[in-house]
Image (cartoon, rainbow, N blue to C red; front, side, top):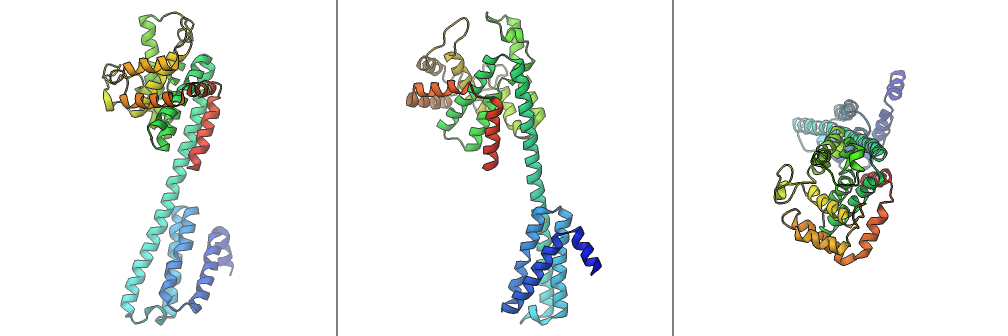
Length: 336
C-alpha cells in the first residue's frame, strides 16, 4: 500500500482515476453491455489531460488502458461476447490507441490555449506601457484625438456589420494609430504654426515607428500593426507607400476616415473645427480617391442617423482614460 500512497501523493489525479475505476466496477455489475463501459474511460482521461502536462495525461491514458487489459486477462469472457478473443484484442488495441492519442491532443490543446492567453496578457501589459509613455510624452490633445478616433472607428465598423472581433481590433488600432509619435519631437507636435517640409517628413515617420512598436510586442497587437502603418495610405494609391484599394488593410481604411473626420471637426489654434455635416461632405468629395467608398458610406450612415448625438458621444470619449478603455477591451475579449 505504501507505493500506492506515494504514487497518489505525487500524482493526486490517480486518486480520481481509482475512484472512477471503482465506479466503473459497480456499473460493470449493473450494466448488461460490458463494452459500453470502455467509453466511460474517456471522462477521466480528458479531464486529466485538461489539467495536467502532456506526459502525465498520456500516463493516465496508459494506466486506464492497462486496467482494462488486466480486467480482460482475469475475466476473458466478459468483453468478448460472441466475438473471438483475437478480435477482442484487436478492438482493445485500437481503443487504447485512440485513448492515448485523445489524451495527448487534449493536453496539447490546453497548452496551446494557455500559451495564447499568456501572449495576450503580455500584449496587454505592453499596450499599457506604450500608452503610459504616450500620454506622458505627447500633448493631451493628441491623446484625446486618439481616443475619439478609436470611438469613430468602432462606430464605422459596427455600421459596416463587421464581426465583433474586427470591431475590437478597430477599437485598439484607432486608439494606437498615432502611438509612433512618441518618437517625434514634442516641439514639432505642439507647434501651432504650419509645419515645414522637413518637419512633415519627421511626423510622417510615426506610422512605421508605431507599427514597429506594436509588432515587437506581438500577440494580438501584431494583427493591428500593419493597419497602424498604413492608415495614411490613399485609396487611389497616391499615399506614402503607394498601396491602393483593397491592398490597404481594412482597419487602416477605417482609421484613415475616422482620423480625417475627427481632425476636421476639432478646433485648432489656427482654425475653428467644421460641423460634422461639413466634414461629412468634405470626406464624401474624396470618396474613391483618398478614402474607401464603403467606409465613408458607413460613416455617413452613422452621421445621418445619429446626427449631433454621434458627435456628443465621440467628444465625451476624449475624457476617457486610454488604459481604462483597454482594460474594458481586455475583459470583453476574455468573456467572448
